[in-house]
Length: 422
Image (cartoon, rainbow, N blue to C red; front, side):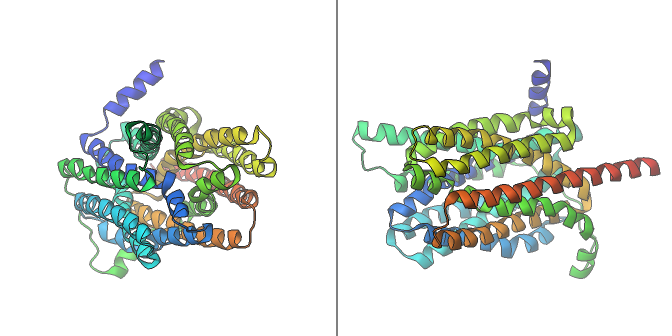
């Protein structure tokens, strides 16, 4: 209990500028989380099939693939607050535009709106971790990073329960026509509140970049370390892209679960993701990087395989409960490793490589999700069952986890070498 009190004290000691960043990101992630829960189902109700939905989603990743790495080169030595504010303007406008484009059944406009919306989220996502590393202190660094990752799960909890609440209460007060469109419109408007905490951030002046050309700028990075740091994330992201964006379609197709039920289940999972994420600093300090990553990731993989298997006996009464339980348990286990792996990678690559690796990580994650969305589109077009796609994800997750463990070993050697030099 004393450890929990000490952990809470460290969370309260996180610098004010980082707390404001987290609050602003929370408002943006409410829209992201609600879209993750019910946007695919909204698209399906408007007549789009799985392969078409996957095609739309792929455009979220193209824009980040094109712009994240150049953006990472630009932000080194720059103030980051203006990018938070620009993102807070783009996200709600593009969120509303997506809904109107879907209702109007204009596929090219839907793709364009997905493209622009992802740029808005990128401006906050790429800059968040470098901002935390610039303004954080070593004593609360793990807590600051954990808060940054906990934003998504907390937004999922809040948005999920709100969605469920609206579906339950709306018919009782004579608003039976309220559906996915109206709910997502509300979250789009609410996300605009993110600009308030972003404007209140006080940013310290960053160290200016000393490189006078693009080539000297590129040569200043340790590309070998960057590649080693990115490899495990790439493997995991390809697998995740085959599963995470389409999990609601799986439950809708296999178990005929509607938006409100899936949103509730997603919210329950997100509660555990949030709690698990907030406890990761204790896990990391107690077990170290290696054991923390191995225990959480391999356990999550087992539950993913269990979830995948339920498609084979979906007609049995307990199958939905087993699938739901595996989904709820898998989510926190998989996500608990994210703050730990991010801290590991940022320390491994060193201060001079952090902005770029954060940008490449975002770009690579979205690039792999773009590829995965296209693969999913192809596989579902061939009528490949969901469980086989999920098994592919489990295999990729396993390879990714092993490469993270090899990275931990390399980082320990790096630390030992630096201590010997000192």
